[in-house]
Image 1 (cartoon, rainbow, N blue to C red):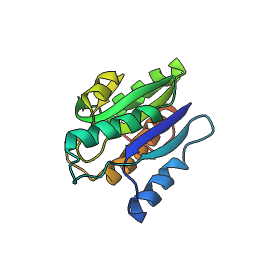
Image 2: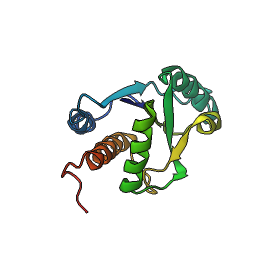
Image 3: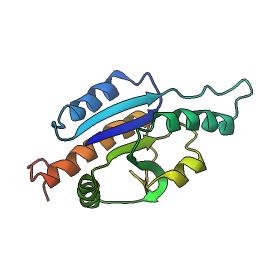
Image 4: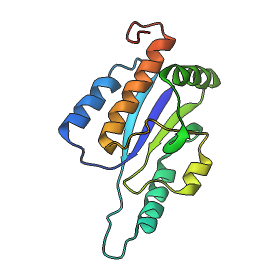
Length: 156
């Protein structure tokens, strides 16, 4: 299985790239994690938030891998525990489809993309920098897989 994270934003601080890579390299051969950065639309000069979201929407739609289950991170999404994420991962793995997680830009995501999602997931009720979200998502995906593999990384 391949897990793709589509994240609007480029040029993250060094610590974001380093922390993300630390978790990404922990995934084994059976499940791989790939980050695809999506160019954000520049604001100003007549580009409204709505126009920016529309431009980012087109880039995101073009980047979604075919035959992928689409999980969109949204503040109004389902608020799962790590154990619930692990249960969902188990079902998704059994289904055989690849996964695609989407992290939106500063102004959010289009309603059309959210409607297309198989799952809307709230990573946290807190507002976080988008770079931090990449790291947190990678860690939680690794943690969920470690639970499924009875790896001692997760403790209850």
